[in-house]
Length: 281
Length: 193
Image 1: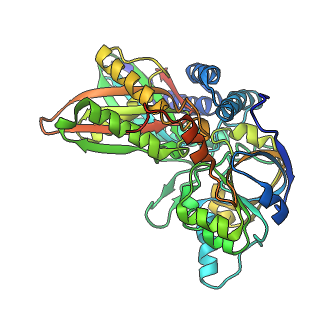
Image 2 (image 1 turned 30 degrees about the vertical axis):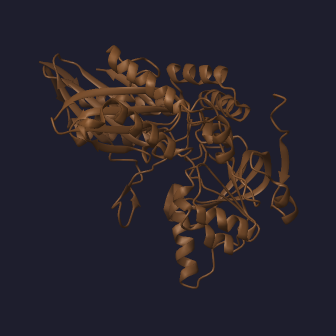
Image 3 (image 1 turned 90 degrees about the vertical axis):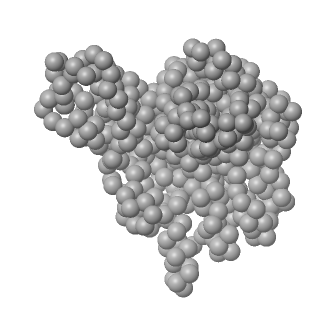
């Protein structure tokens, strides 16, 4: 049994969230640069140029990429032969979140009593935590600072199996179309297909954690991603909705078996400010 | 700058009737002057005040409001990251503020038909700032102060002084809509359908 100090978890979560909020990842920068090169619309190109400049200013002057520094979503993959010592694992994650938002001058955007008082918790906790138990003796931590301009445009559709592949495409394309400029395009489109309602939504979120533009290793799923991306980029929305050929940088689909009665489809959008980081303890 | 991009116009605030009439969807602007800043919770409080017969904490006549909640300012800086939030959440409040004399809104994303009608009726415009460009926009803000609702933290009502703040006209007072114009120009048969 390998021991992992809970304090290390706190330190890691704090570092990952801060780093994500200040420094746009290489894959996202590459995606924006390629979009800038391919885009025909002058208005959209102008926006893409500003977004690339924004990433430089953020890293150089240490200003968060976006003022919506998100709600923290933390994925834990805990090896079954690891033992977290010196404190409660989930409390360690919350402490790391608290520290990240205070130390990093990040905006605290979480309110409690969401349907009534809506009082800001003032430290951006609680983080949303998803845990899986895996073989091994390590702890893999992925921290996502999820902005809500894009999160608010999420969708879950419980299709009939008869709708098939075309039904999946239509749900995703309509979702991006109706979202328009709200999720800050160019977006990354996370799609979950299968499972139960909540599993499907989680697949869509996990799809956002893939490197921008990496295709799914299964060629049938990768083909679906390509077909959806082409349809989405035919919508004409463009960067910030100003009209253009590039509305999405990538479409990532994750699939899970489902019930004979169902074809669940979930869409979780990610703005161009992709902010997640991973560490292994 | 590419030849097919219209020249950027420098505008000094507040927006006069004369300037408002010349703004068209798609125009690129650089704004200099004073702008108010408020988002969901500040809007709700302002509307609650008006509905109970109380005055607004600031006079919005002729003013511009920016839908934004910044990250905390670091020592020595006026403001942190400062990009726009989605405007549709303010749709329910905006027509009432236009009735109070508000002449401009800055945000991102489409507005409701009610808001678009109100913009034409009250001769007010809706401008887009680049979502996710909060670091870049921050560099155009020279000063910031909280003017009301300080207990709301990032959602407090603020006043900022800006210099060459980049904004694009989305909805003008003539009914022009950049989102519709832009999309129709680049939409293909491969899109929705």
